[in-house]
Image (cartoon, rainbow, N blue to C red; front, side, top):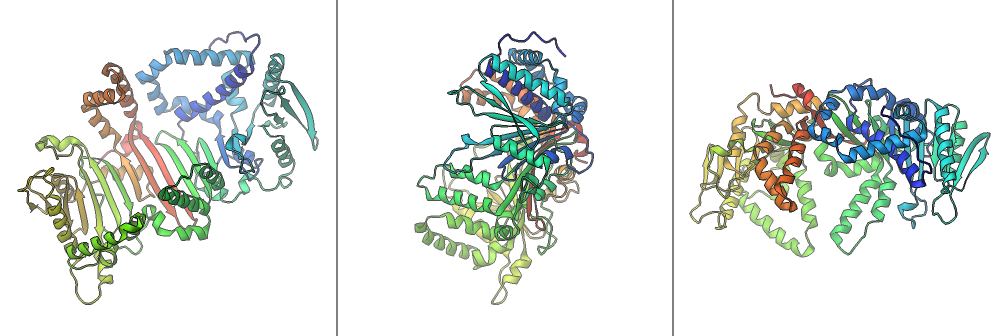
Length: 634
């Protein structure tokens, strides 16, 4: 612990209150930024749940921190924290004037309060902390009139009492606090801090129970509710843990999260109410769709987990069963799991080793088409009908809506390659720096079920004919292709015989439609299917971080950092030009970003739908390089 300077003679209200708040926020930020842990079971921390039982059910948003005292040793000893401390950027920050000012201010305030940061961390915040926000019941009032409730379980109640008394004494002496009024409710003493008239500050009430539970609020009524619930859980009515959807959301946040957050859909709806409506009908439709979605939801929860194996934010949305069914596959199709009713499917994830980013998901092609057509203005609808007639002719007479679109999907994959193959092909104006490919399965079984009136052409044949026609039409753009350009097919890949950013392949045997922005990239994807190790990199990331999620987007950060390092000079130049700054100032910042990125092996966003529980889950995470052995390509 650094030497603590002597306290200020007359600490002002802003100095004391902001600095004390800064200590708590800095400790919380340190936990969020550097904690790593080892899982100890799936049960949530009981101390935080006990505090949540003191929070009224109508809380709009709640944040809960668990077991800060027990986690601190894991923070200092984790591989990730050690690597962060070793970063030149981190060392430079420690030596910067900003860090020096922060540490001096922290030590100054701690010295004034006569407490160490270890005591604050272990004896005050160590068990659990809960912060709840209540929007005003009057919807005409803006969110600035919200009420707040802070509750914590302290191991040393006497220390909490001493800190409160010292802050009250200092603020009364400085004239910023008018008085502290003692009162009682049901035999429990509590106090209210009142500010001078004209200050604009709301009174603040607090209560400290003998077992170390402390509650603080800018609403005396909320403190009354806490006292009532502490004395008898049934007296205060439903608590936050009894609120609709809480248990469903909380159960989906299993493990040992560092922090949990819960939001009521009504809270989010109030945010939408405050948005300007405007006269744009499309914008109004989006807002209305969001309101309908929130209306079906009962609770949303999020949990931050920081471990040596991953840093992950998990978000769970719990829905009411009947509205959940009404939303159906059109909303949740990309995150569905299982293969019921869609056959074995092709090996879409057989990606070449040059892939650095990939996404795998399901898509309801007919539903998606109807959605986008529905967004078109009414006056454009006749044109769409004519275009569909043209499409039918190109599709060998198969109806686009009734026959072709239902046979596409639902599984789909898309990926981006590095520029490792670029040197092998002369770079022309239409040659992509980072080739991209997308593939979707062709479900001929569905097509046969939809067939009427005797044998018809296969979906694969119809798509092949239509896309060749579309490619020939695109070649008419002489600004991108010469007039002599022809449509050719080589080794199963159809493209123009000049560099052009579109190519496709119909892989009838593997039942895939493949499109890309270069013929070479599509060809590499086809060739990768013969390699037993194809796609192993992204499959290993999936197995390590989200094995129960079929829908995901993943970045191979190790490979992307190497690509960025190869193009560092052009990246610095582009950034400097965009920001209007000297390259010499930008280059160190790019180095810092690359240094931080090198700590991680992969990043991912995954999702799944739990139909029996009417629950949707998303996971956003990073896999540290220290855990890279579990995700390395075999």
